[in-house]
Amino acid sequence: MKPAAFEYVRAASLAEALAALDHDDAKVIAGGQSLVPMMNFRLAQPARLVDINAIPDLNRIEDAGTHVVIGALVRHAQAMCSDLLAARFPVVAEAMAHVAHLAIRNRGSIGGSLAHADPSAEWPLVVALLDGEIVVAGPDGERTAAAEDFFVAPLVTDLAEDEIVVAVRLPVPPAGCGMAFDEMSRRAGDFAIVSAGALVRVEDGVFAQVRLALGGVGDGPVRARAFEDALVGKPATPQAIAGCLDFAVEDLEPESDLHASAEYRLHLVGVLSGRVLERALARASGSAS
Image 1 (cartoon, rainbow, N blue to C red):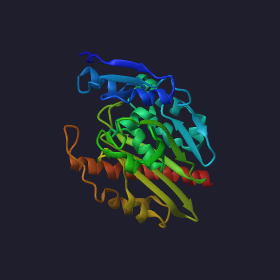
Image 2: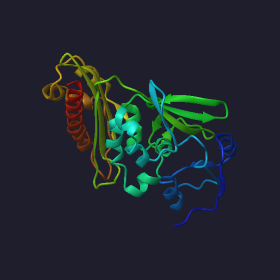
Image 3: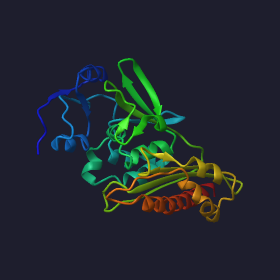
Image 4: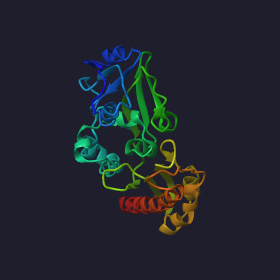
């Protein structure tokens, strides 16, 4: 199938893009890896497409000292190959290796992934795991939103129709943190049935900091706060991780669908959480030594 007729605007600046969005039915397009298939199947029929690929500075990866700024036009493959991100957030490259296939990683953008808000996508989970902020521009200027506020429901965000995702800000974690990501999908390149990301920091042989983010089990990325609280202060061992895994599924109510039952998803939460936490612990221990 082919898309319905639409008006095409290629914006040369952020101001021009925001002006073009002042329309009854306009959509932003960057990589188009989600939007174009939806248009081809007539699941989306915007009257106007606003192409933001020519806007300067939206494809930068910048070290801002206390945090790293990643522009919305940065492609998955670009993030995967970034030396700066590899040094500060090695979990990014590990997560990007699971994003679809090479052609999609080359064209798909970070901003597009966040705005599309698929609960199983890698970037929403990474931002939640790393306590990142999503930077949004609109007619009244810029604002920031934490992941827990930005992702409202599957494919729904708090992004207004006249706003554009312009960047992500990731705070640099303390030295000595270990990170890991893994997911389970039916086939390589498919969206995850369940995904998990972990960050740990060890001091004096105990867990000083723990983060666990999950995908595919809620309306958006889920931080396992009960698990994090339960593990902090415990001996930094695989046995301590295993002893707290019941907290990882606390309050989770995933849905069953044609890909997996709710029960299987909860099982995968335990398996993947244990896997990424043990890997993150090994990396944190190796960094500390």
